[in-house]
Length: 165
Image 1 (cartoon, helix red, strand yellow):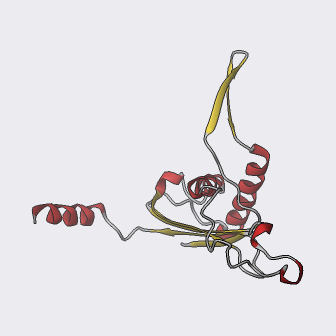
Image 2 (tube, rainbow, N blue to C red):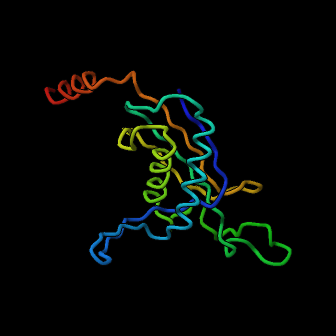
C-alpha cells in the first residue's frame, strides 16, 4: 500500500538533539520543540488517518517529499505591485530551512504515526523544497511507497558485473 498525503502548514525543521545533565538525570531535547512537536503531530495525524488500519511497513520504502515554503515579504513588490513576485526574487528557496532537517521531522512523524517500523526503512529518498505558488498554501506533499520488488541479489549481480568489466 502506498501513502500519499498533503499536510498544510509551515514546515518545521528537526535539528540535532541536545543533551545535558539536570541533577542526576540526562535530558535530551530538540531545538524549537513546541513548534516542532506541533508540526510533527500534524503530519502524524494526517498520515494515520490516511493509512487507516493498514499494517506498519517493515520493508524497504521510497520516501518522496516536496516542501512548499511561504515566500518572504521582501520577494514581492510594493504598492500596485504588491501581489507580484519581484524579478530579482530567487526562483527556489536556497537558504534556510535546511532540506535534510525538514525531512528528518517528516521521517520521525511517520514513525510516530505507525506508517513504518522506523525511518531506517527508507532506502530511496527524493526531497525538494519550493516556494508555494500563487493561491497555494505552504505545506508538504508526502509519498511513501514500498519497494518490495527490488532485491539485494539483483543489486549484488549488477554491482559484480560492473566491477568485472
